Image (cartoon, rainbow, N blue to C red; front, side, top):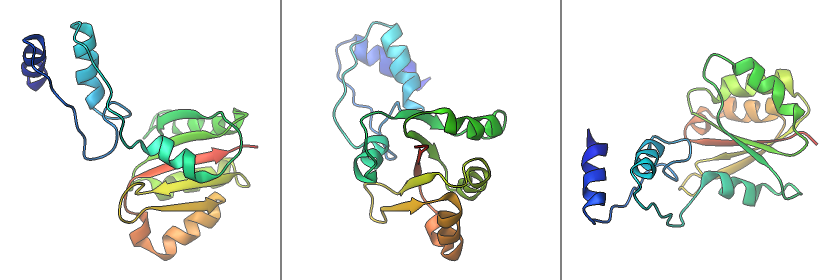
Length: 162
C-alpha cells in the first residue's frame, strides 16, 4: 500500500508533496484518502496555494453576491434526479463538477429541472482550451453539440437560481 509507505516516510521526518495533474488534490479527488490517513496518524498536513477549479470558475463567472455552495461531482446514478431537482432549493449559486462523459446528460437534466436558470460552465479552467460558457442549459447544450470537441475536458458548473 503506497499510503503506508508515505505515512512511514512522513513519520520518520521526511517531507512529502501531494501533487495532482488535474486540479487541487483532496477536493473531489482520491488524494483526500492520503490526507485523511495522515491526519488520523497525527501527521502535519499543510496546504500550498494552487489552482482550484472551483474558485477559478467563481472568480470569472461574474455573478453577484459572496456566497455559493460546492457540491462536488453530480451523482453518477443513484440520487442523480434528486440532486438536479434540489438545485433550485438554494438561494445562492451552486457549484459542482461534471465529467466529459456526462456533460450532455447533465445539461439535459438541467434543462428539465431548471430550464430558465442561468448557468456558468467553466471548461478546462487554467488550461490551454479554457472557456466560460454562459446561458441556459439548452443554449449551452446546443453550443456543445454543434462542436463536439468542446464536450471534452473537465467541467465546473455553476447554477444561479436567483
